[in-house]
Image (cartoon, rainbow, N blue to C red; front, side):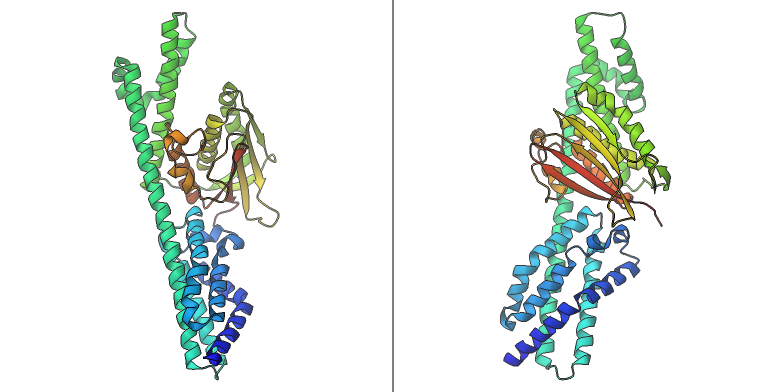
Length: 410
């Protein structure tokens, strides 16, 4: 048994020295797999993710006594495997891609074990069998924990959609109570003519009618029609995305022009809330992308920030993502609001889990105007554009959403 343990320790040392080569082989296998495409736009550090930790788990287990190797795998392998599933969900992978990545890792490690066995004719059958059992346990734990974590996040997202729809129905009932006959009269025009109704009510505020009750009624009408208009837009957009009816249209863009025009349009709303809205980025910043979807992503996040920021304001920035990542560009929306209590290390799914009454403390949870729907739209649009989302929040200081887009698309 001591000889077998020594042979496994030598194998572990060899695998540690070959770890980079194994990762390169795995990365190449992923690139050539036609069923795994989401990772094509990720930089190497994000693609590797927690895979090196899984290989390190295997190496550590080989150093332990054979009888306790499986326990070592469970103790040290569950966390990086679950983190892999979480990260892949945030990066827009589907479940099949998550499992195929780990299957390709298994193939690469098995090939490395075969090569080591062929090069070391003196290696005992007991050591070979023990090493393969340890790797089987490591790979099994990785797939089980990663897929389980991914599936849990999918369930949380689905639950968030249900809560958003319940919130939408509650708002409709409230509007019916507030406007009574006027709602019934206008109901058949809500979908096609909400913009006309909103413009008409705005015009009424500038009319000669000065009765205080009429003015108060008009203000309520404007507020509620606008709120419902945004809600129906979000519900309709999410339905189109979930049904696969949205297509991306990639073309050369001037990102600076898109962002400046968007900020100019939203700035009056921010000023009504006594907030600043600043835009900061290089002029004429060029990239490929879908102008409509990029604008919608930014608009949802900016409106969310305006709604829940009571003091200070919002800063919108765009430009190069980093000096060592020339393939992507970054868009960030930073507010000075109360922050999201889930913290910087939590997944975006935490924001979709919250209850409506938590909105003041957690601005990105499901709100009575479909805030959870808005964030789901942001995530799905980012998935369509091969973009990734980074969230950083400090309680009491503010929240920053950072979106990384590809500069070019194949």
